[in-house]
Image 1 (cartoon, helix red, strand yellow):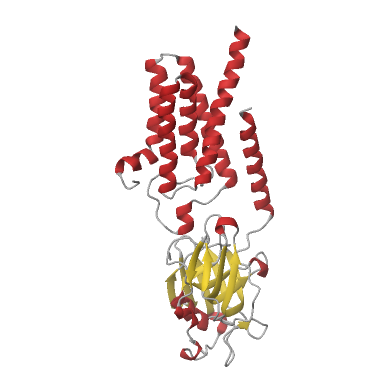
Image 2 (cartoon, rainbow over the protein chains, first blue to last red; image 1 turned 135 degrees about the horizontal axis):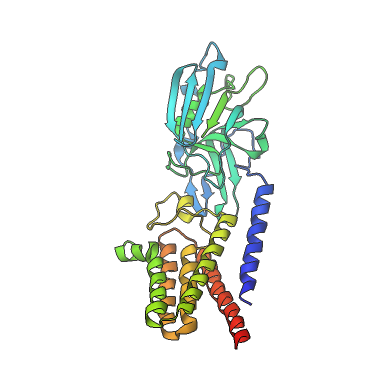
Length: 217
Length: 154
């Protein structure tokens, strides 16, 4: 009789483990690629707690940055070090910026490898997790999605600004690379694809390639 | 309550003190090596099972998820189920099988360990609940199997 709960728990454990192994982790589910700020959405939800979207997320920042005409866009690349929880933006050998970040928790690891930015959005709603780890965050600012052949777009990995925690330097996310919002803003206007005049979001294309992102342990 | 150093001790290494106390009882008071072996097998089974479940479910701990600091130690394994509760309740149940009154004291201690680990943000209540199930079941399994042996022998 006492064996029954032990066997049931073990079976459930095997089941949960198998399902998790079969379904790849989706860092964030994004359905709106317009990049528009949703001025009505002022409250987000993160792990059962409500978070108010701060005002700086809504700031109109585009005019503060003139388009940075760099001679050779292929010189730019972004380096993320998972063990140090740091990000560097390089132009050749010159450091453009450096910041602490928060990457994926051990349960939702940030993938390593070489990626390219495929779209950048001034703001978007992100949803993900389940049960007590569910989150629904409107107006995530300065989102730069990256992909490669192993990590396709639908898995939703990105670099982005963060208003729901201040834990930079330690892992915290569902797989994305969380930057302090001012740092994300600086990176957003520097990184490729280049924003055309008057637009605040852009998909990468053959003529307007996304910057390389290298993530390593 | 949890900031009290005694509570921190109870909810970190206190469980081992409990296990030692139970072992000392069987060895020094009852002076029955057979019971001591049963206790060790019980605690070993509960610990092994809780460890395997932790590895299988691999659930993050509450303080990790909320970006806060844990208030007590021994948090390197995953959250579900509680190894502390499984160990404490397996030993307490084993003692209860032999001595009702002493067992109840152990069960209260085990409950405090579980409660403290929730208050210290290292466990969710459900982790404790399943830890209790694992601990009590392990003790029950060991008791049942050893009873069968005794029946055969007599």
